[in-house]
Length: 240
Image (tube, rainbow, N blue to C red; front, side, top):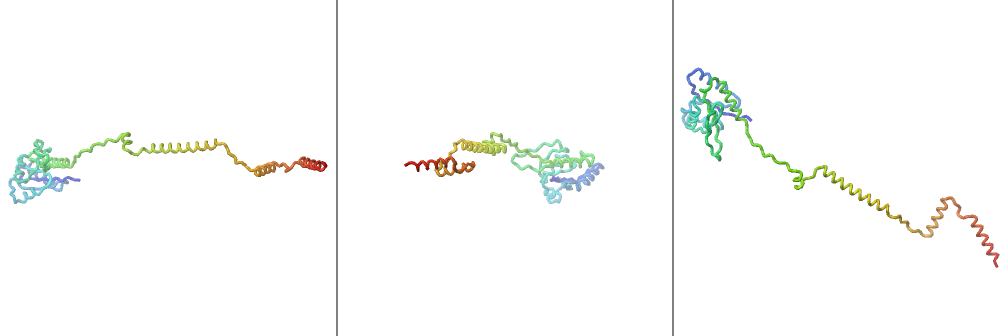
């Protein structure tokens, strides 16, 4: 954002060729210069309370640069007499200014940059000094916020901060391994138990024996056993 500067040029040019050339050159360069608002006024000590120039000066807000043909302290005194208050501020064209005392709780007054055109030999030098002054005003200063110390790992754990992803994954893996080990242990215990076969009835045993013999391809009865039975029957019949 551009910072504009009001430049008041006092029209009381001395009757010299150099002064006329500086006055004309400065006015010609300042008209339309970026960031500069040029105001031409009559000699400060000649301004009455109802004069247009004095009302114009009273309506100015913000910092003011005053171009006069007198010493800065004389110009400052004339500004105070007509009610234009401000703090005379040091700059390249007024380096020996003494800072006015300002109360700590008071609102900072506007700054007055005073130029004595008698000390310049060309209008270019005046324009260069004003341009550098306005550029310096555009530089904003600010204080850096205090650097916040990052919490240590132990502090994060005590504060209940979430664990890193790697720790969470490793914890899940540990839980999965424990569950898998429990299942494997239970399966091993089941295998180690003795096999219990339910008891069968005599008919179930006979049917199982018959099924086993049929599957092995053996005959249902042995011929020798049949002959022996027939012989026993004959002996029983012969016995009185």
